Length: 342
Image 1: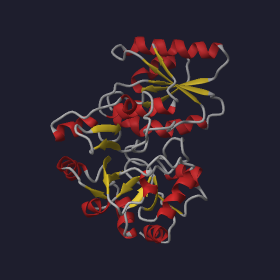
Image 2: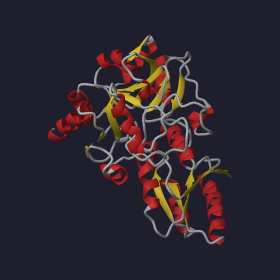
Image 3: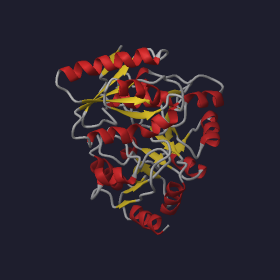
Image 4: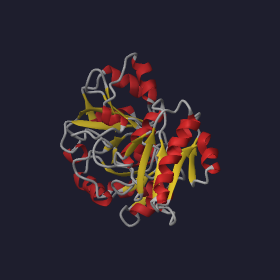
């Protein structure tokens, strides 16, 4: 807890702190200190029109940062917080425009990580934070990832090991009715729909097919989550995995014939096929447990950047159910919308 106290002291002094959550690591500042918030954007090289998420440790703090909170939003908060869900709400006057990119709405969440909650509580203020990576890079799921991107840029880095979910929180716009999914994440949208008893609108940009014109919340605009090396998503019919894998292999072999050195990011179910074909591959996890795929996604993107004998990657697509929607959102954005359909 000494490091938590040190981090909280840095926040109160106007500094910025990298801290763990259950989703990915965040880079935070005092929500109410505009100059400290600006330091987050500078450290990340993040565009100023890309708003931050306000992290709270209690519902009392929710009522500090948001106003006109609809009953359905309160219902979701009481059901899923602490947890990987962010609600877009109307902001209070206490939240400076630097946090929300000048917009009248604010994204709020309560992380389900004991260190994060202790840090926010000790700081005495809500913490405004995006992910603790350089803008555009894969989000950090370990303290080592944070150090690689932000060493010397953050005042304190709290290393608490690997995160649980490996992808960011789900963001739902509760200022509209019906609610709108702005970013899929650690909480499947199906669970939110069950709790509300109605459908949540899922725009194309939330599926990772294009980007929003205006960033109401993180992850809606700009290229995100990307490895330095070229990434292509190969999508198709997943009902016959052997036939699908054969088509992926054909695409990859064509690249090899051109002199490229590709690697396939695949599911456990198809790995043996690529092995038999003599094609280099990394296993993301089983389709039968998409949670593992999501948890491995960003660290795999970072791993391929470390491979000197690989110059591009081809990733299998996954069914857009549950966490699969978040996986595909991140993968499509990471590829810069480089998608091949077979």
